[in-house]
Image (tube, rainbow, N blue to C red; front, side, top):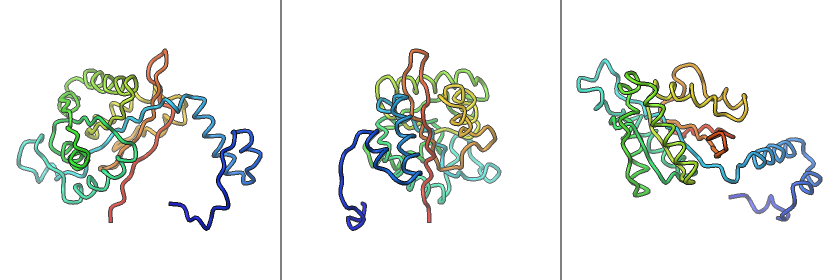
Amino acid sequence: RADVGEINSVLWLTPAAARKKLTHSTDKDLLAVFMDRISEGAEQAVAFLVVRHGKAEARKAWKGEEAHRPITPRGAAYAFALSYELACFNPTRLVSSPWIRCLETLDMFSWQTHQSIVHLPQLTEDAFAQNPHTSWECFYTEMLNAVRSGTPTAICMHRPVIGGMYDHLRGLCARKQLAKQLIAKSPYMPTGTAMSLFIIDTPQGPSIIDIQKVSPIVY
């Protein structure tokens, strides 16, 4: 909450009037960016959060099935902290690879919000390695449903699957500068973090007009 001692008055202004009122160049730049996003349709944009699961037990040390490899205590701490960050975007649909490390990453948010997690087998590492196109079709369907129904969605996946989705998502970005935020080099995203894609529907299909990194603070 802002310190009231720092505020002289509060008033609503038109963008043109606000531009004349502002005296600091960075504030004017911020207003210009805001108006650019509004002109692109930000008022109708839907948040679509790509989540990478929390740090998992090492593959070499894990003796069980790969699908059952859990997150570590530090991974759980990130998942707990991430739940507060996800809440800022209010996802009302949770979807995930059914492998345990992805489910454990969304479990806290699921429990806190009383939402169930929809399992998507097409988004496991094995399914992606076997048929990347099917994985993309599954992901794209979720994205399309989110933007057309106005349903903020969080989708938890694995490192190689995220990289494969990024290959397609760069082509949906409204600007080249946005596409550069979808890193082309592994690991694409740190474990236990998310990328919030703000998507609008256009006659040509979904368009990404903004991207925000979602990084929890873990002490």
